[in-house]
Amino acid sequence: ADTPFFALLNDDIRLHMSALDKMLGYLRDNPSVGLVGPRLLYEDGTQQVSVYSDPSLLRMLFKISGIGRLVHQKSRLRRYVVRSGLGRLLGVASLRQDMVTGSVDVVKGAVMVVRRDVYDAVGGMDETTRAYGEEVDWHLRIRQARWQVAYVDEAQVTHYGTGQALSELCGWQIVEDRRAILNYFLKHKPHWQSLIVRCAIVAFHGFQCLRTGLFHRSQWRTHFETCKLGLCWTRSRSE
Image 1 (cartoon, rainbow, N blue to C red):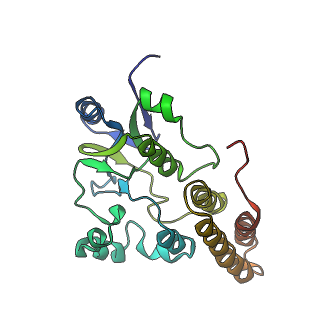
Image 2: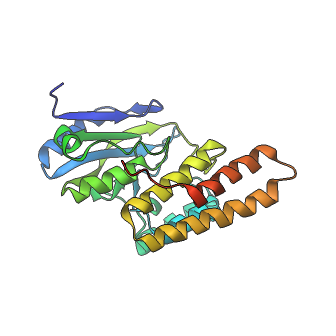
């Protein structure tokens, strides 16, 4: 197909009236923008996190340690942080609800519309992991190629998936989430930062192995596989 744009859509979304038209219109009106995403809503109409900042070492350690579950997207603590304005103060886009249409680091990958020129120049998303984190790497590569990634607040989409929002990852999802974090740091961050990420994965999931080994065999295996990933996994030379 020779279409100048194409959309990548999750199977758990519902497009609101003219959502795609508004995103396409923004791309046509802003030739420096290569990819856009909409405002995502929960089924009850409340706002879902739609925009992220680039991963930082401190925030990823916060996530790997499990402390991040205290501020999952529907937690009372997160609502307090958002309402207090700390998200703006800290420069963390996912902790803000006052985002307006414009250039951002990352839009959530549930709905994305991208220019074919951008896809042809940059390539698609990294297939190193089975799930999680692909858009973070992709959007960074798009921006490195001198295109902008933009959030279009006027385009609204209901997103029914809540697993990540509630930090309810389990089994292979935990392994792939940690692989995605390590993959990003190996590709885009200094070597010392990727070493710290490895150490954090091994330390936290090693501790969880000891904690769950006697009573929760399936959980033990998940943490063992994740710990092994932190120790041994690396990107193949062809990637």
